Image 1 (tube, one colour):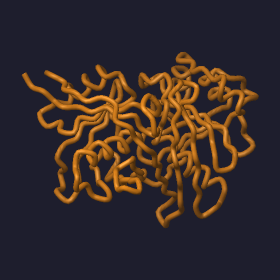
Image 2 (tube, rainbow, N blue to C red):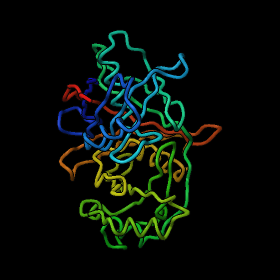
Image 3 (cartoon, rainbow, N blue to C red):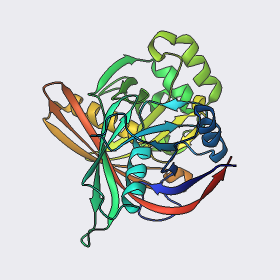
Length: 297
């Protein structure tokens, strides 16, 4: 019988039972791929992470991220939460961690309070912004369960974008539609069938209502087993990059509130800036520890 220690944290919040839940296995040596996937499904959270020794000793760790049904190349809140857990267990934790992940090398910078205690982290998306295809307003509205008229297109059509993780369909909507949205699984299934080339058979929807440097957002990914996500760092970064792209500015920052409708309010601090290789983005937030225990296999 083998035992593997885990810690759960709430990410992108400063209070327990807010933000997005995450389970972290700080030492996953000895677990098989199938066992990692089974544990992620058992926890039934949007993501679970497994920390392994790095392939390159100059890096901090290899981090594998699993949602309920598959491994992910990159995700935001799992990196923030994993860095927080590792730093809380290491009194001599570094300023930043470098995690090896399928999407590339991910740098996560720790944030601390005035006393030097770790409070959270900022994760930089591993790749520049990639803007993909647009999808019809009717498709986006059907997936969100809102009227077509509630999808705002003055600035952009529903647009696929990514920066290292799964692409997200970015859709600006009215504040009223944001509050009323209800994902429609059948509409998601039709969307990936009708737009197979653009979506690659996967679709998650990130609807948002901006107000200057502040935005309210919701994320739906029922095809991955996440009916709604309370805080999505890997959607906040392409949104920040895309908003910067639209504005033409050199840099920008946004406070994104998510999870309100779920009763798990979250605050994501996203920023984006232009570089010679393209628009880069990051997202930061606080974390709170919740549970710890062992998985016995």
